[in-house]
Length: 194
Image (cartoon, rainbow, N blue to C red; front, side, top):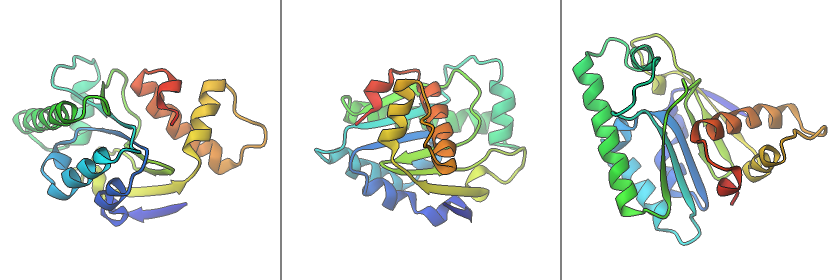
């Protein structure tokens, strides 16, 4: 496992562009991705591959009415005006809609219904995870971890409903991140096993 200060050190555009099977994004708002040409190009590159099966995006959408929404937005964008927050959500929604239109059989957007615990990015067998904080410095500048693991095996654990007794501490910790994403996606596990 690797721990670093700042998400940029993991070079998400390169990670996305090299994806061969799956990407799961659990980061709530994707306005920054929409504004980043390297991120957009890298996602397009992944989606263009025949071997690439799914881009699952868990998102806070403009139409959401969750009771925790306002508090969560204040955590995500501490110090931003309501207008700024709404603009960023709209940019995120527009970006996700364009992705879905471009690749309707590969892009799946899952509107958030439960309060998210942390940002999580899964690319093939790489899991990158951070934390939200009540701070004017946003999540990309916080601490981020990265672990390599057999994501397919962890998805299968969820499908079987049991964590094997032989599982390592690292596998169990990674499994928790997988479960957070699957719970937010509210989809059948077999749909995600690739």
